[in-house]
Amino acid sequence: MEKAEFVDTYGREPEGLWFAPGRVNLIGEHTDYNDGFVLPFALPQRTVAAAALRDDDRVRVSSAQQPADPVCFRASTQPGDVPGWAAYAAGVVWALTARGHDVPGLDLLVDSDVPPGAGLSSSASLECAVAVALDDLLGLHLDPVELALIAQQAENDYVSVPCGVMDQMASMLGRRGHVLFLDARSLDVEHVPCPLEEAGLSLLVVDTRAPHRLVDGEYADRRRSCEQAAAALGIGSLRDSTLDQAQSLEDDRLRRRARHVISENARVLEVVGLLRQGRIAETGPQLTASHVSLRDEYEVSSPEQDVAVDTLLAAGALGARMTGAGFGGCVVALVEAGAADAITEQVMRAFAEKPFDHPVTFVTSPAPGAGRLR
Image (cartoon, rainbow, N blue to C red):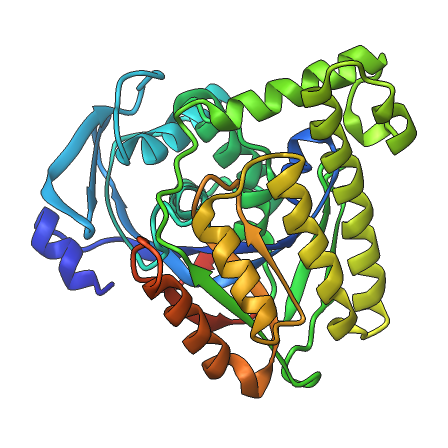
């Protein structure tokens, strides 16, 4: 985005440009809202926000992806006031005011190359871009973790998507060449080196283009199931359970949900241990085991993601899994650097034989977290 686009929209210069990336979760799915462990990294794809404060309480929000008149609301907005994509921006304004910060009106223009609905956290990218812009414009000097929590609050309580904090933490705290080992209970983080190029490896992302929908109740249903399982075990969170304890659950559905969360936490710890030793290639089987668990135990995969994973593995990927909350979206695979093109060709051929949309693939690596562009 260039400042001229803001001028074209609002007739004045922005006070700056800020950005926040999307994310891929390498491993650790549906564990963050269970006080567990996750291992995401920030993507090069990002949302850019141009903004300028106003001298009244009116907020105007525009998107380069949604060319139309700006969405307008008051800085004193409340949940339910703003529908659609603009609710993610409005939610950040609301969350800041709910925490006692005085937020005036502003003009905001956002532009993003994070694919929406792909499970790459386009919503967190938007929230965090708005959060860092307002933090800078208002001189709040909030730390990145607090900004991530504000963005999460916007999504939980304004947009009404009960997500964990992983997406926003990855967007705020990403570091080039590193994955983010996050303890969702303590919010302790460790930037773990992931030197893919040195290891002769690449991360291949396959956007299956199967619609990724979280607001239809499936995500909330999984979260409720975990809460019910924990309550049945007499603990506060599945983080504190063992597989043996999970096996004691009488309800088969709750038992399978709990088994996934517990085993997934163990897989995250295993992958972190391997990365600390520089054994990146050996993480592949854990990625694949994660997908099997998400498909069979947690039941959040989709036919498109399953075909992508099966094809990637058959074509030589060292490991592959769905990434994101599921119900469509992307798959991530660990592949040998020179094999990405040939593997991609196999995926394209497999999808052409199915009644699926044409997938989009790209090779990626960990990128920096949110900040100011200029």
